[in-house]
Amino acid sequence: MDERVAIEHLKQGNIAGLEILVQLHQIRALRAVFLITQDYALAEDIVQSAFVRAFERIHQLDPDRPFGPWFLRSVINDALKASSRRARLFSLDRLVGTFDGQRFETGMPGHFDHEVEQSIEAVETRAEIQAALTKLTVEQRTAVVARYYLQLNETEMAEIMGCARGTVKWYLHHARRRLKTMLHPL
Amino acid sequence: MPQNQTRFVLLDEFAREKVPDDVDLWPEIAQILVSHRPSRTQNNRAQLWRVTVATAVLLLSVIVLSPARQTIADTIQHFGIVETNSTTIRNGPPAPGATAVAVPVPRYSLEEAQKQVPYPIPQPSWIPAGFHLRGVFVGHDGVVTLSYVSADWQAKVNSGAFGLSVGPGTEPSLGGSAIPTTAIRHITVNGAPAIYAQGAWDHQPDGITWNGDADTIRVAWAADGFTYVLSGSKTDLGRDGLIRMAESIHP
Image (cartoon, rainbow over all chains, first blue to last red; front, side, top):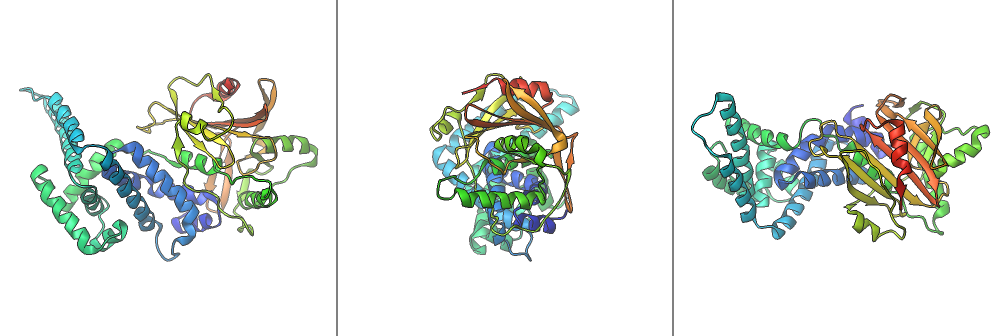
């Protein structure tokens, strides 16, 4: 069963169609939402709810357009809203402080074998990415994920984020400037 | 490596750490869709019955209940289970008037869910080691579904899950799982008639086929004016373990 057949089944109320769409799109959506929210449990809730909503609203999908972008727009919007709500509840300083504590505990002893050194480096790189992403605003983080993880162009980003292309460029520009000082490869 | 590719790899590696390749949201999404049924009121009961039957026809195409087994079939319908005499079901055309009834359903804590239903939510006093209650879904018709997951559910490495759906009343209620007659075993739960089945539907391009070897087990029964459906997936619990869990369920 391919995606178009799955969508036809879904439009007829057959949840077998939804199962196929879940298998096709869940990993990419989950990872994108996790990168935006930095919270796996929240990401899972958002993506699950989005699939259930897709089941309910599949008739709104233009038959000539693919499911992926339509679904991602819904998921990214939900991630933006959820992250904005959470940002009002939690202090970013607290999150960054947690990261700093983890890094301090990792320590930097004088001698490692190569494998251990690589492992520590990988852990630190991931921690640095997490810390860098956390320091961005929700909109900047979403722009970075949409551009570099989902690899969307500016028009697609504007559609998914529900704003003008100029706004997307502005978010991305400022995100890159902030990340440049925190994370060299970005 | 181009700079954009480097950025993708860095983000992807970070995301993969928390979201591995074998994550599967489908079992829980299916559980949400099944547990979320339309409300039942005196005014819309007849209409609901027609829509429910039409939806069942849509999903199953043909449901044949043998007259000789009518009493058993009635009982099975009480359990939210649809018995079908076929192990291969072709996709049928949409039934007139059949509508999707699913909307996003939030997951509640047990305490939050308890405030929304007028009866004490039953729970098993015994669950397999390593499993815990993750949350509760509450349907408009008062059906609650308790979701139990294994400790490693976040890592999603061969993680199992249980779902316990409980609803007030024993009137016919379709829309739950469809089980072939050949897969159904008649058992008892604390002395009450019950059914047990192992298997799941494999999806094919033109329909679905029952796979009796799938690691999905369920037991359904009615007691004290309530209907219960307990199901497990990837749990390695087996029939006796599932019955033990079912018999430990009390308000």
